[in-house]
Length: 224
Image (tube, rainbow, N blue to C red; front, side, top):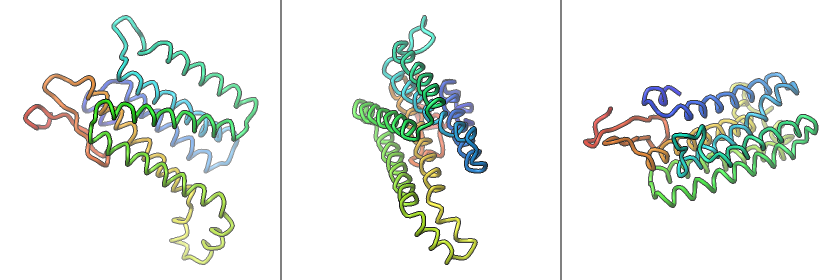
């Protein structure tokens, strides 16, 4: 969020970081309390955040005109209706499969759009960020499934370890770490793609390959 503010990027990216923060906060609240309300605080923003990510990605090639409040109004309306429908349905029928399918569908859609955008622009940095983001998600998802299907074995193994080492075997926690980092990298890639398609005069946006630094450089390679 500080990088968005410091580099005077569009405010919609600041909103995206806030949504990512809310997802992390909701996940922390749920796992600390295991309350149903906190579970909703965890799961609903995940779907809302992915819908906003899709909006950001599609807005790169189809930006809003001066008279429009949002880019691609029809898609924006569809995403809003999807969020409302999903939320109401999930509140009345809190089935895990509903959330999992919705999240999986949106995540897949997001990655497919990213692949299309990268192939269009052929940005090596974006390709690197995408690969790292996707790998982070796959590693995290794999660890989550190992934890889910071999929970008893992991619990027994954990009991044989020193107390200071046993937390490292909480594979579900690693899923959250890898998924969070993967989402962060995906957002950084979206920002870079946006300014590839809509560059600022005589300036280029630079992000390191780990996504930990973002800054403007002028045509001579000097920091702005």
